[in-house]
Length: 79
Picture 1: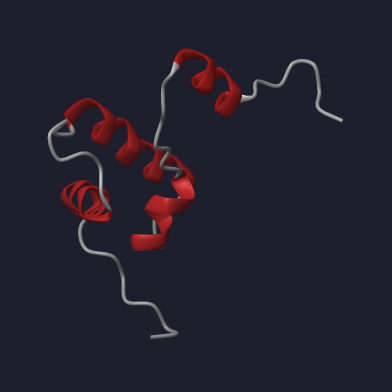
Picture 2: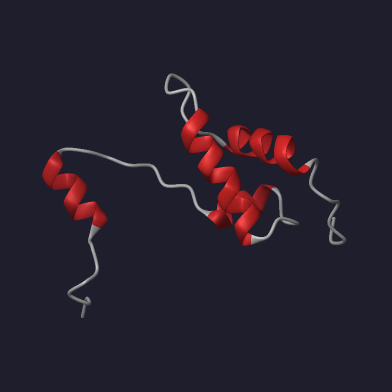
């Protein structure tokens, strides 16, 4: 059962004839695993403000912004 305060974003968008592509903190951490949640959120906020609407947001966009803010991702010990 769904909590009455929850929003069904898919239903809301469909009613408006809209779509949305969603990127998360987890996505940013997938390409830059050494970032914490706050740092990954900072990447997403900058991507939102600065993305090129003709190109959209891609994994490369996330990686470029993360690198510009926090440098290259540290090498993982499992690689």
